[in-house]
Amino acid sequence: MIKAVRGTRDLLPPETGVWNFVEATVREVFRAYNFHEIRTPIFESTELFARGVGEETDIVSKEMYTWEDRGRAESDKGQSLTLRPENTAGVVRAYVEHKLGDRGLQKLYYIGPQFRRERPQKGRYRQFYQIGAEVIGPTAAGSESPARDAEVLTMLADLLDRLGVREWRLELNSVGCKDCRPRFNEALRRALTEPDENGVTLASQMCGDCQRRAVTNPLRVLDCKVPEDQPMIATLPRLSDYLDDGCRTHFAGVTAVLDALGIAYTRNERLVRGLDYYTRTAFEFTHGALGAQNAILGGGRYDGLSEAIGGPPAPGIGFAIGEDRLVMTLAESAAAAGYAAVAPVAYVAPLGAGMNAPAAKLVRELRAAGLVVDLGDETFKIKKSFEGAERVSAKYIVICGEREFAADAFNVKELATGEQVTVPRTELAGKLRR
Image (cartoon, rainbow, N blue to C red; front, side, top):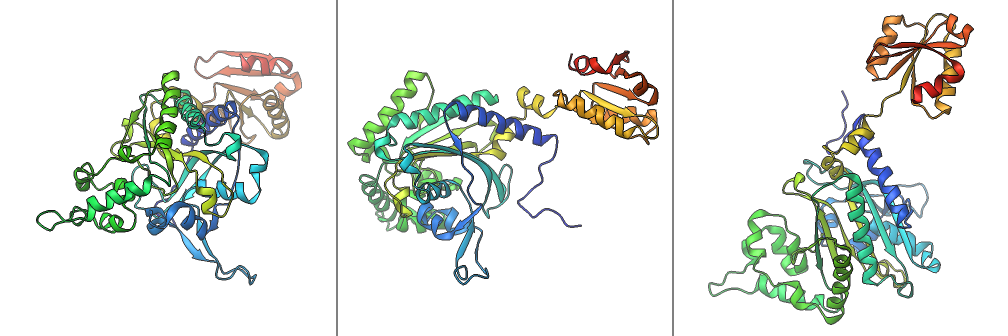
């Protein structure tokens, strides 16, 4: 038997009802903040991620699904393509390619699959789903303002509250900018690679990835998830000590708005996120129900990403929600459970030869009236029709035999109570709705 590839999975009813609840709520909240949907291809030029995400990140160096195009056109041959491991780079590429900056500040969101070849575990898959949003535009449109960062964080707090995610926690940091971060990187490199009195370096006691990063990109050491390395990482210099005045002022502007709105947050000095394009504001929303890997979503500011992929200056901020992990946190949400448990209000049971066609017409009328209705088959006996109604958890069964159609009135039985009444066709939708 052929099965789904390791690290992928089928999403089946009734769980898909929870996914629909999440996505419907996302669209409502994002619409209220004037965000508009964008849909980009699921594969892009590999160069986009190498230049945008960063060659030293785990995503680019270890996790991408990449292949050489073998297209028929001569221009396609030899082109390296990659299934998107994240969506921000693709959105910024679309922003640059279509000159969206000419329209002013852009507030865009997406919902869709991403792909990373990492070790499958609870809440982590090789094909996973993200919900994300980006605010990007020319500086003159206010894209650099700390108010934009605070608005995004407020929208996320509102979204989690609307979804019924309780006890979320916002962790916040500033990762500096191109002017002040090099000084911090150099301080990290010295702390990691200069030997102590015994000739031993800190990096040499850490995992292989950290030993490599200590030389090539010291900031990525702070993103290490190896438990044994955490006590050593805790001794490293703090980024806040190296921020320039502009970054300090920007971060203070973000927190001032959050404080005014009463949105709680914690400053996490070690939070840098796993992508090289972040500048200044970086953040994660976490939840205790997810265990050690407790991040529901994360994001940050990326003021130089457009230029990194060949575009004009276009400061921006965005985030990505791991939808797989978010759905896990909604296991006990009454709102999500109710959305997933939607059942037909009625099961229409045609009884006798030739009843399928008139029953189908009746069902179409009821559905046009906004009712969720399921339909049996004329070959079913009465017992099988009742079993069908119970299987789909219908509230009522509507008996439709030749006699009922002749009278244009139908026997409607409530399955839970056994109460049965005869209802004229003109009143049937109203009865079922009540």
